[in-house]
Amino acid sequence: VIKNQGALPGIKVDKGLQPLEDCLGETVTVGLDGLDERLKEYSSMGAKFTKWRAVINIAENIPTIECIKKNAELLAEYALISQKNNLVPIVEPEVIMEGKHNLKKCYEITKKTLQEVFNCLKNKNINLRGMLLKPNTIVPGNENREKLDIKKSAVKTLQCLKETVPREVPGILFLSGGLSSLNATMILNEINKLEKTPWKLSFSYGRALQEDTLIAWGGKSKNKNMAQKVFLHRAKMNSLACHGKWEASLENE
Image (cartoon, rainbow, N blue to C red; front, side):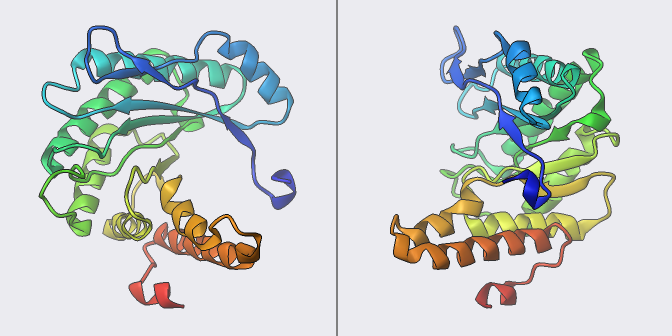
């Protein structure tokens, strides 16, 4: 079905999170055991890309450098195994939006995380032209009193990427990470309006792409057509945002 639409199939290959030993509130992603064998199978079935998500939480005294380094090393090892199997790795180091941190703190931790990730990728001799990055945008924590400023978040996000992501990386696909559907679209649009970048700036949204659709559907088959229309609309809005061409007036069409 996916191939017939002219799209490429891929698969999430990590096996979730487990607590990081001696680091309260921090996690590492597991799934390297047997990954090479699994990827050989997925590749033979037609998969073209893979995804692995690392999680970095912000709270008092965390993240520790140990947590950032460990997750970066795992991301790099996953990317290496993927590329050895001719699969494109989507590298996803997510600095979590939940928390009391402000915009500045999110920027600092995201920058530190991305620096460590690319250090590890280079140490593993990852072909940067054959990978994609899936990062968070720079936003204040959802428990912070600082109000989300779309323009400021876009500026800080692009600044962070320019300071950490090599030009060879072909694409950066933002995660939505708890942002509302509209805010995710608006930040993506604002980033693409700022300046021309060496990377394609696009989206890999979960909640922000599906939430409105799930509400419209409500689990009832009679709402199927409406749900499809809502999903297509959200996809179109994000597509326009990839070119900095989204406008608020389009949301009412």
